[in-house]
Image 1 (cartoon, chains in turn purple, blue):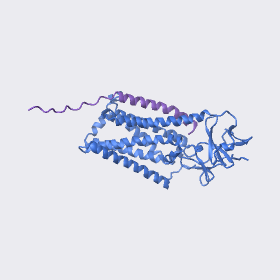
Image 2 (cartoon, rainbow over the protein chains, first blue to last red):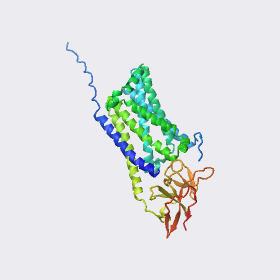
Image 3 (cartoon, chains in turn orange, brown):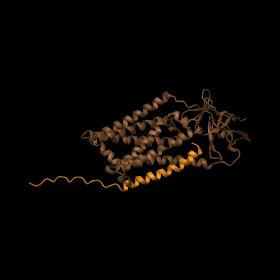
Length: 46
Length: 344
């Protein structure tokens, strides 16, 4: 790895990692709650 | 080095590497489908295609994770070097799995006679301003485009045509593709399927890649902090350089120099292999030649030239032994200049 390649690698990698980690955290935190399961059929008393 | 197209030069190691790789992919897909089929048996053809989409998608994510982990792993532990040997075929196979994933998605829409819905989904411009609800398929398509660019330029022809420096910069786009894939999953299936497996896969994969890069980066950083002052660089006594191995020093201008010893012959060359800028200083002297740990490219210690019929040449550095200490002049000599000395 050349010096310039190393410098670019060290600049880009943490920025990209932070953006992705932040985006993932938002996507996880803001995801809509699961849809409620359909109510189970209650057998009517005869 | 001439720029000419040569077919892939297969050897036994490459065939074994590729056979193991293809077997692992086939095994993963088979296991995924068998387990998923039992847990949620598909009711119709679109459901079956959906399982295949998930199998290829998760497989591609895991393959990308492994590919990005190979570099730092090989730096941290030499036992992982064999994984690096044919990493480009790994990348091309990953591209193949990603293409299968994309085609399966098209097949899913086609079987439901809903291809216009896909077009409508991608051209609903208002959704591009949202975070949750962003057209996540576009992120996957962007990753596919990057992977296509990397796969199509993976051959040595492009490496020589573009030069190793430009080629390496171009192939760093794999990190961008990985980020796009993580967000494609996070804004896509993770929003609708509430299984903890999906966040676990993303956190585990991304965390592994990040941790390995941090560990390898920290090791590299420590090496660069030992950067020497201008003038001849003192390496230490000849015995401080492992026989048939090297010590790597960082010159004041920031480039690294690999100082090799072969018995009592000592020579210094650039740490960059002429092939793919691999770390020569982590290689060994085999059959009298400096041998790159990545793909086995060889150079004579005396002058940094590849043995005939090969034509690659390395930058060399002047070496001297003063009062029992090996010293290196950090001023680079033209590639192929004889500069090694015999320590007495």
